[in-house]
Image (tube, rainbow, N blue to C red):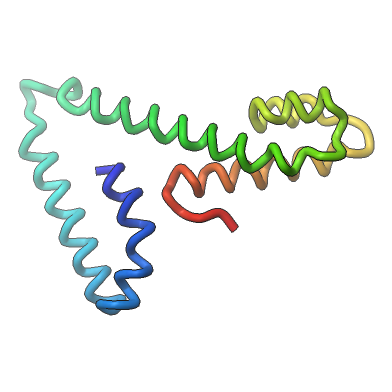
Length: 130
């Protein structure tokens, strides 16, 4: 369900242009309801959480990988001019960028990491970054 949501979130604006906003939203809500109904039918008390665990874990892992890849591709071109050690740390993640940030470029490095994280998140969600 998460995968289809990611795919269709990118298609929705184009579909709305052709079919109209109301039809697109109605179709989206209907399909979400069908997905939830299927999920409710397929998950049982006997199967419990284990019935949905593999699909959920796979979705979280996939989103995490997409976020990480999107972050790295967004931050790499933005790191020119930062000290090499700080830039290397920032490539590893936002927390590393915050920890490595010091001196006159600290605030700029943190802001760069934050913007790159948002771009990575948008990539993971199937949206184009701004």
